Amino acid sequence: KILEIELIMKFLIVDDSAVDRHLLTSVLEGLGHQVDVCQSTKGALEQISTGNYTAVFLDIVMPDQDGYKFLRELRSNEKTAKQHVIFCSSKKTSLEIDYGLKRAGANDYIVKPVNKDIVVQAINKVLASA
Image 1 (tube, rainbow, N blue to C red):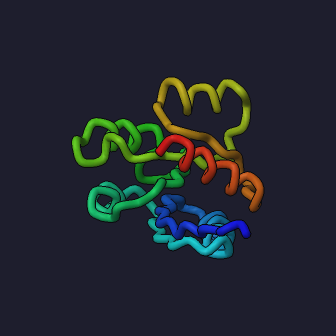
Image 2: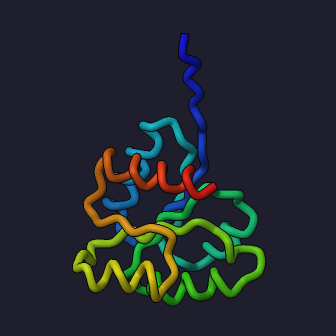
């Protein structure tokens, strides 16, 4: 008999789009995970430093501060530098994805609109890197 273990993980979504936040939240909660959301980067650094998140799904194009700048801030803070960050963006050219991963320093990059399969793959990468 195979023992099936379900891991309940906690994620933070930082995205200014209510539609995109809702879609990603629905997928993650549908998989049995806990989800917190921020509609901008304001207060997100504080939340990440105290929230104990498995990973943060971070949009790139946002009005107050873009995801690249926020990620630099996150990486330069001792408490949050090692946080697993997944860019979640509609920017989808190979150049933009490459920049997000190699230059900006995200751990992973998924393209909107998300679906269950894409999110499951991203979560599996988080688990593999733990």
